Image (tube, rainbow, N blue to C red; front, side, top):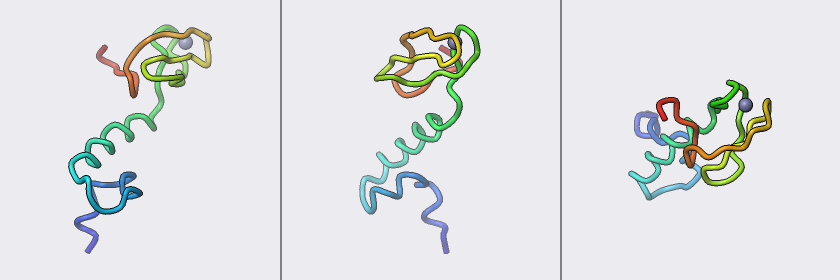
Length: 73
Ligand SMILES: [Zn+2]
């Protein structure tokens, strides 16, 4: 009966409580783990700080999404 555990995923590390907040955290973190693409060269970007990204390929530093690079922005 693993039915109840399904949604939580990586947020399981916080134990019991914070139900809705954990769900939101999983939504953000699952995207963060995916590849973040540089908007200039399509290379790999790394988050340096909140909203500050550094491309590993072209070396550019730019401002973008706080937690992940969004394809639509
Ligand atoms: Zn780049």
